[in-house]
Image (cartoon, rainbow, N blue to C red; front, top):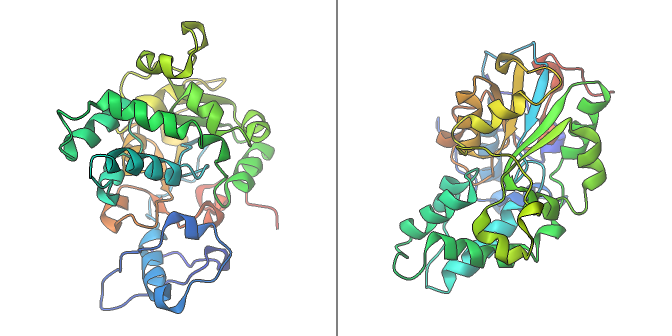
Length: 303
């Protein structure tokens, strides 16, 4: 089923020769109010079709919602890309989109190891060294993270109508606090609870904090394993049934984790994401602005 896009999506659906064009427009343009140039309009229009697909099996008895954070609620993915390119660029390497897509949603340790191995940097740096260098850059920029379009409206609406919602992020507790610097009132008000990754002892020296300041949850297996979402579902006042949980994600690994947990998943992928990497999601949107709560049996936005 193809969903008609509202005007807020900023582009129209278009089909040509039975194929879908791949969008080359960065996520940052999705949050811009500027009009797309005519040169890029066709590409954006064709991309919208893939990103507005709905599966017929959408559940109408959703009782709880679980949200990822990076790239979905907060625009931190651009910060990650810039920092990681700065690190690998010192060795003459390029942090490509394909590599980024593979690491999105993963825990920092495994993701850093994958970057080093994929770019052939073994012998020049370890995954831990890559992570240390990246963190030092990011800790100067995370506090500038802005909300993604539609995020605050959706979170406040669900909270107001009494739908229990939580955060389930692979970010560790320290980075979570940095990223939400400008948005603490919102995050503290709307979420029933927040699940963050456990502190990584290897980087305590970067923060100059003691063991007592670690915080976070001990999630043994990161996304695409279902652990984080299953753990998050158990933290509500009464354990949420995975069958009535709706996960919001932007990354393929996160979508896989949600589906492996037995939950329904709404995906808001980066505009560079290929359609094949969105196939597991139950609904694919260009922006949280396009989410229709009533499609999932949730109270509609006020008119």
